[in-house]
Structure formats: structure tokens, C-alpha cells
Image 1 (cartoon, helix red, strand yellow):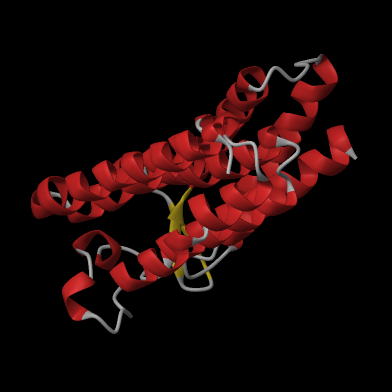
Image 2 (image 1 turned 60 degrees about the horizontal axis):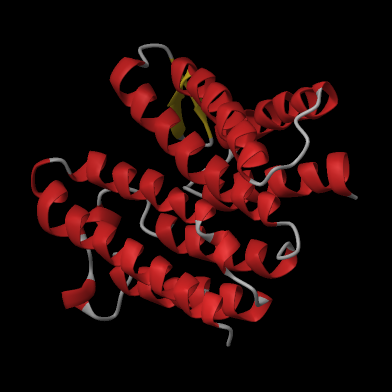
Length: 222
């Protein structure tokens, strides 16, 4: 393991631990739904820690992979009742587990293109998370897909936030932000919004980032 990998793993673990402690011990007492969304959104900042890693296996299986088990043990389905977290219980029970699975898979498959990993993470965290918060607060007009109720204003927020975060990822990873790239990013944000809107049962934590990652690969890399 390279020294940079050690720093990366430490940064991820410390950052996520602080977020979980804050949301579970402080935020969730008064605002359980908002605390889940806060954790969901802020975990996305892991996208900016990725450059620290030098080894594919370390990022995927040591930094990301263990959170699959950990978030499952925090979920309502955990066999260890004392580990069940209020934050996970406030939303889709396995939402954070899907989150961890997504990051693990993206980290391994697209390790040589960190911008793709970042795009998937940011679309899933900030895009989906902010869309939900805005939809809950301002979404008066609703629509239902597979018994999941969502709002039109939430979907608009999903599109705008996802596009903005995709642009930030491209700039952060110093990829060319050409007119062609911007057009593709708009298309990706649009497709991600549709996918989020029709994906039921919290599975958008899987569908949205994978769709974004694959589209960017085919459009601008492959």
C-alpha cells in the first residue's frame, strides 16, 4: 500500500465517521428525514478525495467495500439491534447500502477515470439528495411511479443540480469542458432525472450513478 493510499483511506474513514456521528447523535434527534438527506448529500464529497488513491483495489475494497457491511448493520434489517441507526430508519432501509455498493463497483471498474467515479457519486448524492429536499419543501404538484410519490419541482431540481455537479466534476478533474462536453452533460443530467423519477424503492442509488457513469464513458471516453 502506497502512502497516498493510506492517507486516502484515513480521509474517507474519518470524514464518514464524523458525518455519521453528527447525523445520528445530533441532527437526527429533531430532524430524522433531513438528517438522512444531509448524510446522503454530504457523503458525496468523497468524490473529491479520490485523487489521493494510487491503487484500484485499495480504493474499491478497503476504502469503499467495508461500508457495504457497515451500512447494512446500520439499516433496519441489521441482525444487531444496537447498531440500527435512526438515520437509515428515516428513509429507504437499504439506501445507504446501495450507495456503498455503487461506490465500490464504480471505484473498481473506472479507477483509471476518477472523473467518472466522481460523476456517479455526485449525481447520486447531491443531485438526488437535493432534489428530494427541494421536492419535500416546495413540491406541491406530485406524480406517482410504482407507488413512489415524487414532485415535478423535485425532478427539475434533480436535473439542474445533477448538471451543475457534473460540470464541477469535469472541472475538478481537469477534463476538457467543450461545447460538445456541455451538451453531453445536459443529456446525461436529463436521462439521470428520468431514471430517478421512474426508479422505485430507493433503487435510484444504484440506477442513477451507473447510468451517468456508463453514458459519460460512451460519450466522451470510450
